[in-house]
Figure 1: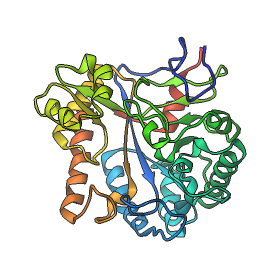
Figure 2: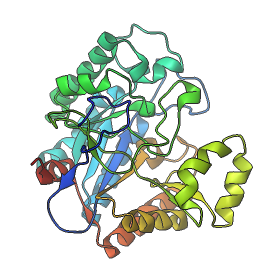
Figure 3: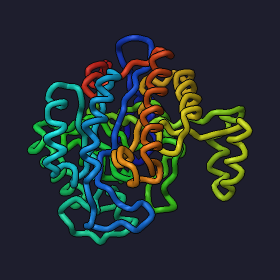
Figure 4: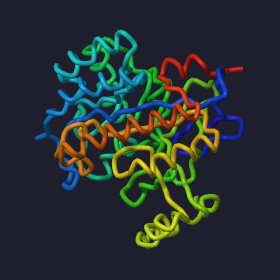
Length: 334
């Protein structure tokens, strides 16, 4: 049965089952956050939220594609009047959804030092992690008029107390687990062996884990979960194997992933019969110069082309766009 912890592998019998058609669902999650220099140490202040204005165009794009974006917002966005003005109507109409993303270094109360270790919210003491999350949840409810039901830890930083805190906050879905990735060398969690399919975290089936989707492709993909982590000292070998079509790790994000790679990943996800495919990216990529992935308007055009191609491929393979409301409404609890 479920073990009530987000830090352990799912227990036998904890798989989430869904009603509905045979095809998979896909979710678009947006890590909606302030801009900061990704190459520098984290800082408490000095951040901007200029890219919030770009959410208008992205929301219109998603509506044209028939996709409901899930904006996982952190504290600087939660207190942005412009963000609330842009998103309040789509949220109220069900054309968008909102969730919580906790960046502890910019989220009150400020009691901890700003360090790499403390940037993973799950490393904080229970009382402080809880206080930060509750502060953010309440601010979102107050400013956006919506109760968030989905959570992602900034930097994917879950901890031993996170599941309990999420239940206390009324969160129904966590989507912090980045399967196939290991952040332990930086003080964070290791998700290398976590599954790609959703599971129930607790005995009462009140909290679901909905991991981000990352696929292994290539001739060695069946052995990749064992082999890929063992090549961490040899990144050049990983690149060689990817170029040769032997083994490649493909997270479903436009950030650092080509269209050709993404389409291979999508096809693999459908072939593996994943019930939910979770896509993601960071909102500062909607404006050139704020992330390593979008440096020019040409890069931005390519980002939108990436989404068009991926949405088209998903639909061609029988996958349907979904939402938090749809996921929660289609769960089989019996």
